[in-house]
Image (cartoon, rainbow, N blue to C red; front, side, top):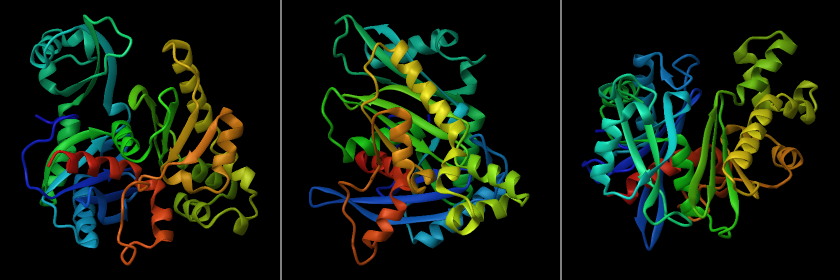
Length: 355
């Protein structure tokens, strides 16, 4: 059984592996002196087409890159916590009468068609999380159900096993963000926080209130929007446009405002998600956005999002309450990798918390 909430038995060394469409990242944490400490971090680029829309398209290439990641990092962990993302994962919140977890699991299996859009429950891996009971009828409970097709989940498992490691847990990107947030931040109880992770080809949104997820959505758009816009404008290859994006606007006669304007389709979908949440969940408007992912490194993105969404915006720091050896990880390096490491840190925390 692959779980989104319960760690399976395994070795005591566990690494979080964030497999994106353009990078694979490894995070290993150790618990010492009353808190977590960064032990290993590494990232390696992934060729285009290996992962598309959350699906493994080139198994052998992914195996090679996972092996390379462990070699570069020097990580000796035998177990891995990884995550699924995008439309390969179904996340749904439903109401149930109060019952024990085993009874709930049996009920979901028996009435799977009511809760999951899959033809046969045997083809699905699923798990659930019972939400807190604040403000609810004492005889009722809210449950978040996460599910994915078995063959999709196992494609990641087979790649990781092919690289000589074992999968201890499969999480969901949006929930990993929530885990990293819970370890590092302590906002007011009434704050409604949007965790927005803008990656290369996907944007994860998890809206959290009282340290608990109240809304999630995955958008199949990300930083590649900038690359594709530059590719069309300059008539260059995708790889050349990606290099131009990395080098920045000043070197290529593009204003920073123009770079940011290429993210407008992503911002539009984020705004639609916020509007939908506010209109349907009966919750207050977003009070703060924590932005992470590769696009969080774009200069002026914080101000652009403040102007767009009319709320406080800051860069998500997944190492805010996690120590590191400054002789191994300099402060400038930590600042550089922080926004892109948020999901990986959440995955590593899931492993470390369950050892």
